[in-house]
Length: 230
Ligand code: MN
Image 1 (cartoon, rainbow, N blue to C red):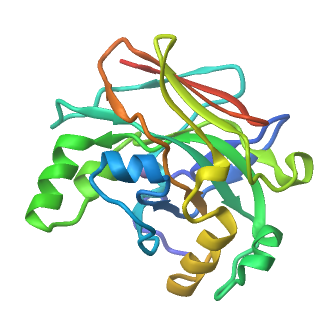
Image 2 (image 1 turned 45 degrees about the vertical axis):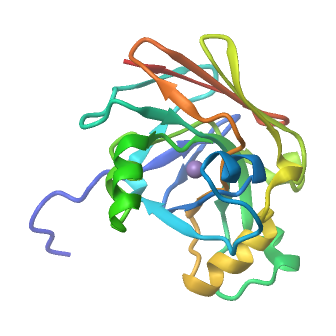
């Protein structure tokens, strides 16, 4: 292979207990908890919709570490969104919901960090969300836990605090489109590949953080993810 520049370093997420999971793509589900959809101005069960972040938007945070995220440029309204992240081990197209679990490698706690002011501006103009959602370090993620150990996650508390004050509280049972349905719908639009990550949406209570803030996200069975904004 005659590469004319050095290839980019592989993007990886640490695995709890050791090892690294290589990242292929990052898919994200929009407005997937009823109360969060309401706070964003929507009601009812609309079909799921998706956006992507580049793989290298991952900010990996190893077990027991506090991640450091630089406050990004061009925004004055950086929001936290705690999300269950699903890691795909086995790719495929047109995966039925009933078979979705067989494609999952494991789960992690993730943050879909959002430049809300830019996202809102793009929504208003009918333009793509990339600048609001897909920026550098916009996807902090804690260690992956294999489904072989956790079992299929369909319920459990999902919470986020900032400097110790609770901000977001929900339960995985409240997902409008559960993980299996999400994999079914996603895999009709794209061929899922080993290494794909799926951010499954955030419960209500999103809000702004500023430099110096400590974000702590928790999902039952997956421990916590701590990120300090620099
Ligand atoms: Mn989100």
